[in-house]
Image (cartoon, rainbow, N blue to C red; front, top):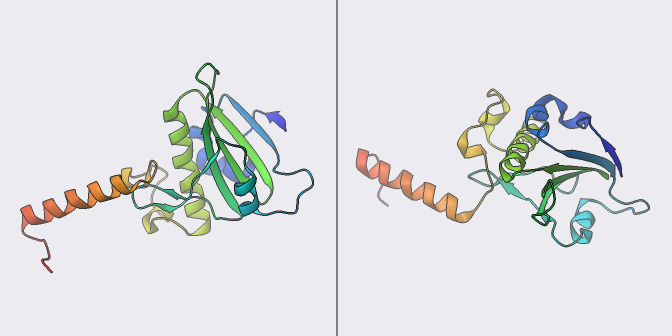
Length: 166
């Protein structure tokens, strides 16, 4: 892999601000002599890397498996930039290292938004809204987060008398 200071061209227009927080960016190829696809990349990833399939409150697609796969990991805490994100795009691999988890999450938010807009995935409004993300579009997906939000929405509907009883 080669170290570069530039943001990969496929991410420049939407993710520059978030990815500027990266302490280090490396680009290269996922495999030197393999014919695999993104699913092979996921299966053959070194221990510690986690592939992100869903993002945001509703778990919208992150990337476009198997063509675009986004992964994260946390290195030992004594490393200068322990939070890493890497993006596999049809065999090309870009890795960004961050000092804080919040910088990593911001970069993941921006990466998700980029692919939602360019591939037509994710929240419909994300394709036309300004670059700022809504809280529902941001952050890791979890069932706990989704169920909590749905429960809050249900209570609000009951409070306002708009709940539908089935």
